[in-house]
Image (tube, rainbow, N blue to C red; front, side):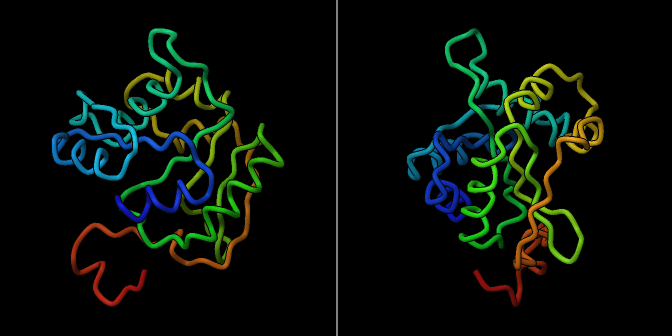
Length: 169
């Protein structure tokens, strides 16, 4: 989480917010240490999309306390090898095209992190459980802007110590 938060802050993302569920207290403490926001996903057993919904609901200001931002970067903690420069490239692309869904590609494959515009933030927040971000993006494929990057880290899902072995940050 440390590397992702640092890369996002360096790229100009503000605020940076982390969603915690199963291990919420340790995630909250780490977010506090990093100086980023924390949102609790009480429905974490419902899967990854429930965490995304928690995050975008927080961004959308559940209860009307905040203005929905122009966009949101969705970065997955299990895709930690994305280069710092890639975050900056994606943010720069989104700033030029703030109505588009910016998805990094490498070797013609889509990866993470993804930046979604305000309209998609609203769609995610109001989507029923059981949806995925992929389902929503498929409906709005006409908004997708693929940004080619020279970074295979956007494609590497790291779930175990074995997955991490031999990788460089």
